[in-house]
Every structure is written in structure tokens, then in C-alpha cells.
Image (cartoon, rainbow, N blue to C red; front, side):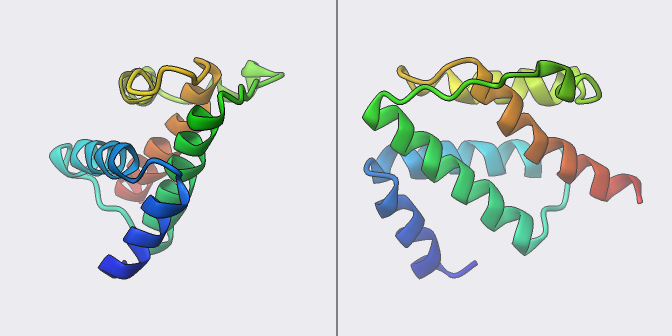
Length: 112
């Protein structure tokens, strides 16, 4: 992704500094584990983070109705997502499950 595209997502989040930091932390986790992230997955991750930061600013709570959908997600992905979500004070823990899917997809890339 080009720097301009990144900046647009950061700005749309309503808190560009937090969004950029959160995104960089997520990408650092992916890179430090030797996972490869495709461009479309990177954009999906950034879009999700941008929207999470926006929900945080607006104090909007997203709830996952059926957490059983996430039973196959690894504890490692959930743990990392939970660590990242802690950066946002007005976000529910349910966001952890949604964010963890991005890490699972990236891990899945490596197993192919």
C-alpha cells in the first residue's frame, strides 16, 4: 500500500496517531513471526483497525453474538488481538475475536 493510502485510513479513523500506532503494532507482530501479509489482507486489516479506532472515539460498542464462530481461531491469535485491543479504552473485548481473524488468515497463508 502506498503511504497516501495509509494516511487516508489513519485520518478516517478520527484519531490518526492511535490508528497508525495500532496498525504498526499489528504489522510488527505479523512480521516478527515471519508471516507474510498480502496487499489485500493488509488493506482489510487497516480498514478494520481504522473502524475500531473510530468506534473507540465514538464510544460505540460492538458485540459478537455467537462467539462459537471463533472456536477454531488459535489462542495465539486471540492473545495478540487482545493485547492490541487494550490500547483502546472504549472498545469491548468482543473486538478481540474479530481482529484475531486477520492474524489467522495471515498464518493460514504460511501453511499453504
